[in-house]
Image (cartoon, rainbow, N blue to C red; front, side, top):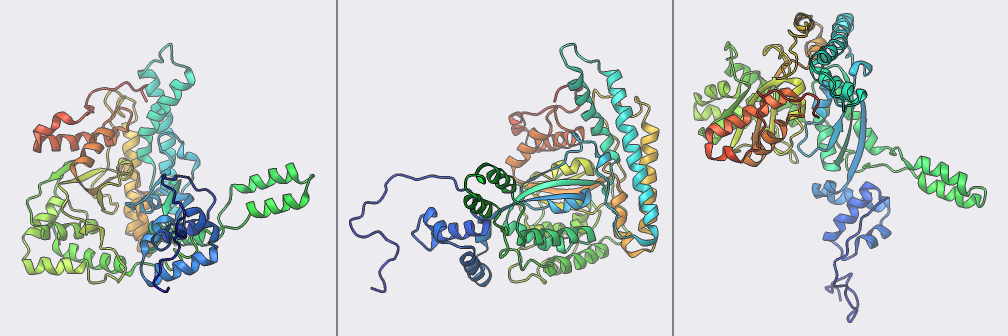
Length: 526
């Protein structure tokens, strides 16, 4: 009968009553996504689905349901690992700026970045000036690393029970914590990520819309890497198999090698239409102009390291302030005061700027994620921000890099200061020279240099970001990032977050397991 259910066992067939759980290995990402999606349309088990699916059938299915019917959740089921190597710190920050992102990046604490090199944009006539500025920062980084290590050894004797190599390694990490303030955003790093295909598609589209040519080029390479055959660890297995069984059965060895070396494109269907996001590009342009018009002629008011905003303003005021915040350099509070003075009609028009270019499948801009109970406007060094940036259970609005906020000096209670180590003058000279180079490149009249001047800003440069979250995430960040093993930059920010919450909600303060960052610490404790 036409209406009879399909894929059911014949009447009288016993049905398994126990839950079956098994791991799956070796399926192509898109084939596995198709097999999992079939749970909603078929009674087949996962093993049965995988046995009958070919890559061609998977592509046909995805073209139908993913692109024609908009079932984008299917792409959540295809997870793909990538290695992205030799990209600038500036590009890495843009690349990982996804809420649904998992990965790891090279640590400025445990690796010497002198060997990494740096990225040079296409700057034409001012390339030599750019190179000179970056080389000067790397030279200062090298000197500061070595000299701070010696200062630490003078201040902290090695315990008898501690081995020399462990002692030196621990203090070297502390020295890198100081020296990293001098690393420019041009510094090369490497990272690995494991993302689902939907996040990858969004990531590629966003990166293709970047104002930086390096970031746009990385987006193209990500898209290409997802559609071409992946590098396979089984290349080594194939070689071993050939050696082990080739002499016994050459045909078997050849077949094993063929299977192991079968080319596997990771997500050829799911990311093939990723393109620059016109919604992001047009909204960015119009909101930047709107912020400039609203704040015209106003100086940037002084602001604390951490400012916990009250939540008394109407939702419309928060939305407009959040829409404009990433496109200027003002604090959230100063910007909000200006927004609050606008007429309701003007605020409505600004909110409309955030939606007018939205396409059929575009998610709303991140700024529309509003209504969280805890909103922290944070002004901290870029290096410390990179660690805070890893927290995904919150909404982060990031401003651009500029010299307007000045730079931090590395200060850790219990550790020799730059002045005590005789390095303060050298540090300030290196930072001031980098800022002079930044301004010279920015104002050089070379079109690419106006944007790319940001690459010469050191990690000690202050940047502003808004973190919106619930109480659980504020609790988690304050506890985790205040720990004595952490970097002193974000430890101070976590402490200020805790103090702000405790002042507003004193009854909750006793629940935090917090480390007072003003207390000297055991620098040999990791």
